Image 1 (cartoon, helix red, strand yellow):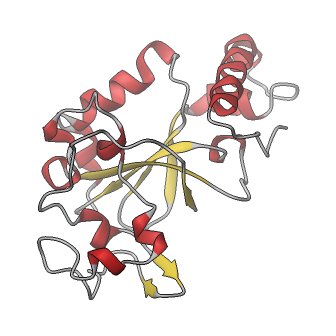
Image 2 (tube, rainbow, N blue to C red):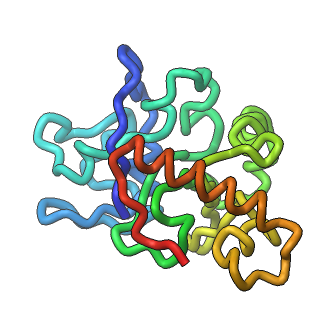
Amino acid sequence: MQQAGLQLVPGRECGDCVACCKRLEIVDPLLTKPANVLCKHCTGHGCGIYDARPSACRDWFCHWRVDGNLPDSMRPDKCGVLFSFEREDSPRTIFESFFIVGRSMNDDRSVFDVPPVATFLQTWTQDGAGIVPIYRVWKTGVKSLMYPEGPLAHAIEYPATTPYGSFVVEALGWRARYSEFLGSLGFVPKFWC
């Protein structure tokens, strides 16, 4: 999984948040760490090898660091969810070309239903006009598609064969917006059914 190339919010720093130091799996020639295990270099308030940290850490930032519209309460250690923009090199579905993933910090699904997390998710998916797919991860480490979901998701993936014909017009509109958005980031969709 790769972090998408996004710009950092000027002046916004991690502070004492070490959510990524625990929640993420790191696979790098200089550091290998399983998900949900605190990195051996974490001091509890930051990285003990910050200036020499591996590229897997140096190049990765949470959503809070790249979205200036998010309030301080959405910092991962404060809201309980580590959100990030990511993409799969070899997407298995259309939704994995570029997406937001929210990882529960305490392996509890209910954290996605409490403010400010619920407000963030509602803003991103409001009236079905959201452009970026959203996955959530808790307990098992397996990501599940949160938006779009159900018949709309099926119609987006399989517009020519979906049994949810009433969603096809909306699905094609979503695909067009998503494709345009990916193009604006310099990504070419690798998976179109």
